[in-house]
Image (cartoon, rainbow, N blue to C red):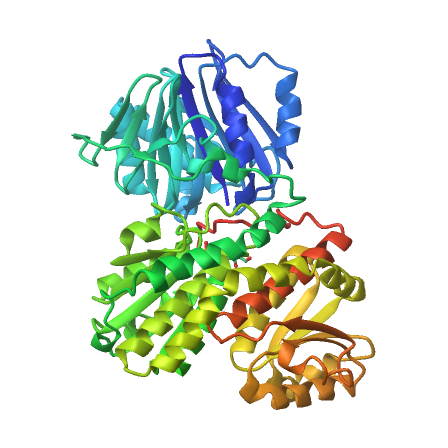
Length: 602
Ligand code: F6R
């Protein structure tokens, strides 16, 4: 979603630095961009639709020497992506960039029109800018104006603001949208996330909700909502700028797929070999809810299967956007597990806040260190996958699944159902995952071959049972989000209850059968689709590789492991089928249309 960066410096290069920062925020998703900079006399604003390179081209024709700039990538919510709606917005004495949504903008707009304000854009942000200008005119004080304005705004926001009469100083605040303050050698930053500033500094502080910041090139001062100065410690980011490069891979997505073997081995080493989460006592809760969005919710479905089947604990999984309005489900004896790669997903944050209000204990499975979710949960289990830049998650998802495997194993121990023999089998499985996963990923020619069979089709179906059904959902999402191929995922036994009417001659059906108990049932369902003309792509384990020619046109063979790792092997194959299909279709793989990496609005 929108990315913001503000930089004020002792040098004259704030535009160049802010633009570099914007480029590092591109992964969040955007459709227009803009920058405001102080040219020594005035605040100039330049905006452009589409890629940041368009903005770059416009700036190349201007003198951009400047000691202070605020810049923005916009992911359209209110009004189409065009230059008028792009940020920064300027009204009266105020210029600002905003990440978030102002929910009461319509009523504020009417009020401001009645006071004589006029508006050019369709955005909620221009209304917030006018409102801040109004508050500034009322209070005559820049920080007080910001405090007053935020009292009148409903919704989410991270703001970088400059005032006409102090254009080398940035004022910032946030609510429900992320913002970090960075300290560099030549100046200071306020940006959506650390990736925007890592080329210049790894020292940063986080702003809490209800805090306000005044940033000059020499000093950063934090205030509470009564404008008392507060002390803030700086932190050092463990991620570095090199992790934000493609390092020779064609796409970030491919690089991140290849990073999975190490990341998964790291999880098992950290959380299984060396630690058992002894502080989570499953028996002390009467129910477990797992809540997340998108792929993280798909990881939760694998988690549910493992915790229920092996840990013998009933689990409910719900998408966060629904759960957040379902408060009657939550009691003080609920264990809520929230799952989020970014740690900033608005619906997931709302769900966790609701559960905390209701007295539930909340565990987070989170990748981004220091993110809102990681800070607000009672216990955070980090996935340590490193920065994920491709919009479509890969290592983010598989590391979440790996954490669920370790949680299920702990539940088994606590419930006394982990026999020594089973423990040994699983241990061997976890210890050998790195090389097995590497082999699955290295089978690239096969995935390209399969992609050639499906890339001209408009519809693809994924079917599987049990744990495979959960993995199908993720495989299907990967294919549709990056290759724009319509695809649906069904429990294999469910297809015949309606959807099978869509199968016709040549329709690709990707079926997964790694679960021994359900293998024959799934095969029957595959044969039902074959009988109706489907093109059958079959994903199974090496136990069955010689028995499937009758019903599979293409075969993916995975090493047979346990359910604690098999979903990770399976999904890696599906990630690469989606990747190769998207490549053949000429799609923008790392930045699929309409999508945002970090979904910070409801
Ligand atoms: C799909 C994808 C999304 C995210 C979802 C939740 O590839 O990345 O479906 O999984 O938006 O994001 P996080 O995990 O950051 O909460």
